[in-house]
Amino acid sequence: MQAPLAAPPKERPMPAPAAAHRDDPATARSPRQRTPRMLGHGDLRLLLLALLEPQPRHGYELIQLVGEIFHGQYQPSPGALYPSLSGLQDEGLVAVRRQGARRLHALTAAGRDYIDTHAHLLAQARLRTEASARALAKAGLPAPVRSGMGALKRALASHQGQWDRHRSQAVADLLLRAAADIAAVTDD
Image 1 (cartoon, rainbow, N blue to C red):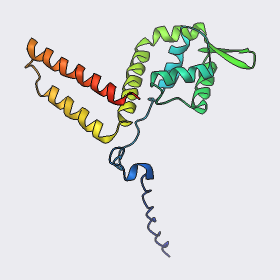
Image 2 (cartoon, helix red, strand yellow; image 1 turned 135 degrees about the vertical axis):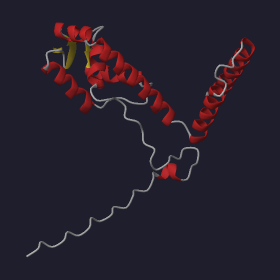
Image 3 (cartoon, rainbow, N blue to C red; image 1 turned 90 degrees about the vertical axis):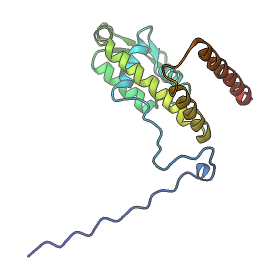
Image 4 (cartoon, one colour; image 1 turned 45 degrees about the vertical axis):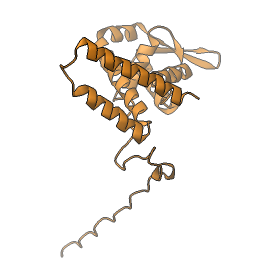
């Protein structure tokens, strides 16, 4: 006797876009546009080592410092940060001591050796993190502003190799005036 055929899987309806963005063309996003991943695999671990290099720090301070790298657009949650710190402690790269009710995290000698040996990995993580911070800032801009930025980039790129001193200065002056005008419009 043959086994009965399985029923085809039910199709799930696509969730509706957030109401706040659905009808506002200035903040609308395409259905496939997502917020970029903030940190690559293992990058939080590397950032923590780099942030602990100058001095020991508390977990909350580390969260704040990562947030500063992302210009306030992203901060790791305690649920992401503390397991990473625990893993670094388990590896012997970070030591923890109590300071009152708080825990102070510091690099061990092995942690400093790791940073010295893997400086190229830290540099790559910093580059990825800077790219993520830029992408996050760009994703937070309204669609018309992103479109205008794209048009500006295309206009500049279309003149590759055709820059003399006069054109360079004229374009630089235009960009500086535009930056000042934008600052005046966006300052509250």
